[in-house]
Image (cartoon, rainbow, N blue to C red; front, side, top):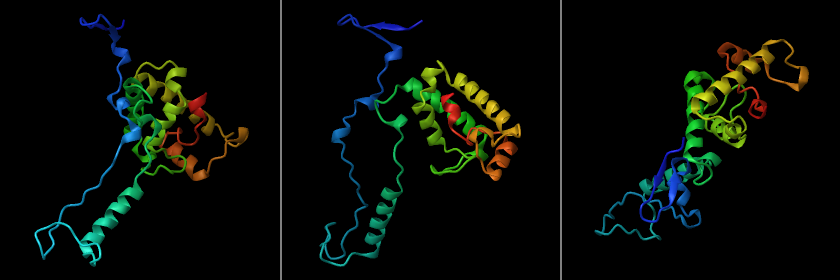
Length: 197
């Protein structure tokens, strides 16, 4: 049953399921990012301005290097996290399930987005769950339901990879990756086809 609120001013109705994410209202075409360094006073005057022709102080060079490094280490934002791409409910369901497996199998998650099997990256998992449209396709209504669905897929992969016929059907996994997956009983990082079956 949907909760409905009637606005007495103009008589329009809205449902709680149709909440708009406030981030969706951002005008991405007109965002300006400015980086400010702590102000340091010049020894000769009380101004914070520095003559661009003068030699820079080592601290200023370090600040610029730090900012340059931070900007270039930045990782691209995932589709799921972009404003207006999905609703908060979908994001919450995916976050719940991804965090559940992240906490249950910490040894199987890597901070690197370019991790190798059998590892998963939390952000990549969240993005893959969203991109595969598993919530819509499987009619998942909660984070708990998504956890159960993923656990079932993990069990199916376990059956495939422990049956001894791993190389049949084109499944090629390194021996070390398979050994680690078996040790921790976590097989979702060995392949991604489970997202689409």
